[in-house]
Image (cartoon, rainbow, N blue to C red; front, top):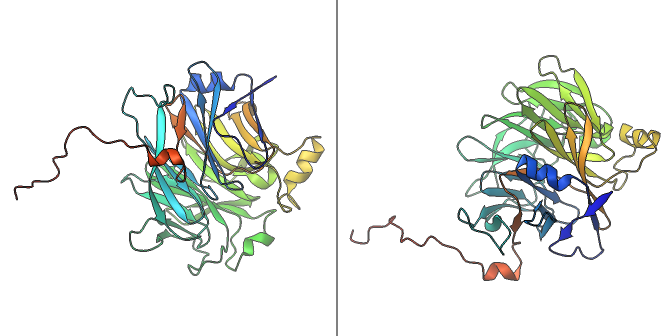
Length: 364
């Protein structure tokens, strides 16, 4: 049995049916979180929460090629086609938007990077945004003058050029610093990774520029939680745990879709799954594994109990949306919403502090 979640904005041009597991809302409430996820295929940010009456809320806004997503307290960062957006919660403590939303995220700033294929992002201990610059095979940050400031690259990448040489994609932060990244291959040629999708995927220790494992298939989204390293072995459809010392891997759970985006909360992995596009699954173990199990590929969100390897909750999308990218939790938020950068509502949504600023001394 499934419940149909309410949509705040209709999905165009084709209807997409969104269904959720029967106890999905209860899981969000029990864990005191709401979710944000992106679809780069349709260019949308989704915010998911529970309304005061218990109904599931889906709030949808448009961000062209919405990809990497990062929550930082009362702030969201979104990587899009050629910009990084900073969204701020405009509500004061105790306030509600439209009588039911306890977070209202407003786009306050967009940094123009150009099309550099921004993937996963994180915020370091100084508050600086770190992002995976996939096109230039490096970790980077925002630069006030230029498109980006490169911070780190794998040793096997000889030069920073816009050739997407290894498809660097995932970023694991720990204690406010980058710890691990994932890449599809160790190739150093133009789009060399495309011929290495089935095997040879790597997780790299950033601090030591060391390959932790090269036994993965199109890996994404490394995450370090309680000194345990998890990663999506996307070409196999598996969530795996990696021994950071030996590189050995242990399968945790199989999910019937191309996995690309993961966050972990209370011993549960929340992952995004996508249906195939343009032969995405071709020659990957995932295609055969789904067929062997008699299943069909999913587009949606799956919540996996990491101790038992069981999918305990889910969101499924059928229709116009068939590919998702990243997912993040919003802690202590029950029902969030946002306004998109091109919405009419944004023109008339104004907030400010009621007290006069003491930042300036006009007498001097």
